[in-house]
Length: 124
Image 1: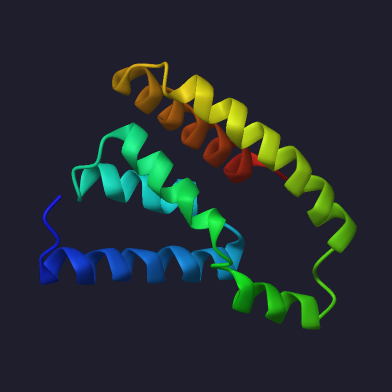
Image 2: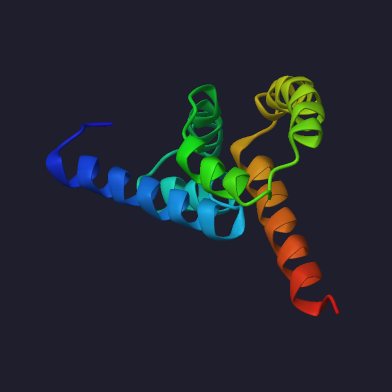
């Protein structure tokens, strides 16, 4: 992908939006960035998911986490346990994802988004 000024600004704005939503409601990467990278930036589903997952390599959420931590809203033990599972899960999930077709992967992603949205919307 050619990185002209419009693309650079667009990607930075997408990162800003995803970061804001992550800090606000705990979402951002998969739910916001993947669809936007596919629909607006022309990424394949595999590339969008891999690029979004790559964000986790760096401490992108450190400032948001600090705000939550200062108010007692971070459970460190739970975080560490989730990290252990996440490392293994992301490895296994990525191994599975790269074997699936773009079409199948996009459909799985869409069904997951709709299912989560419906559960949250109708939850009492």
